[in-house]
Length: 111
Image 1: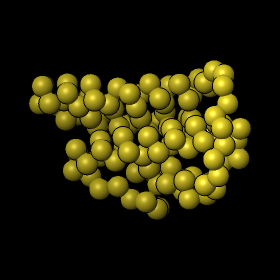
Image 2 (image 1 turned 60 degrees about the horizontal axis):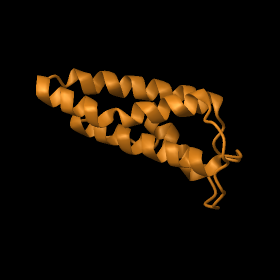
Image 3 (image 1 turned 90 degrees about the vertical axis):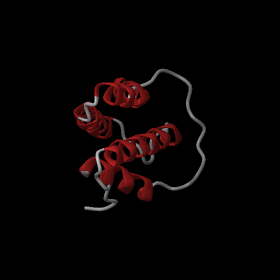
């Protein structure tokens, strides 16, 4: 819940100016977070097939941990890659919201 509320706070602080995304490699934390987000459909499918919602709960904890590492290491607002990182934050929020919804947990926007 904290990670979701933190991500929401980042989006509120961001200015809605459009910066070009710089070409180049991703930071380790950016790549790790993006990879984890991309695994969500497979986790949901495995949880459904095995009737094991704890797979989604464990995934949610791991996703939150990776987001926290990303946030601590990669400044979002004001960075050269602000637009990309804001997109990554939005993707994290949507994925986390979906995962928590499947577990019957409502997200909070503020702590």
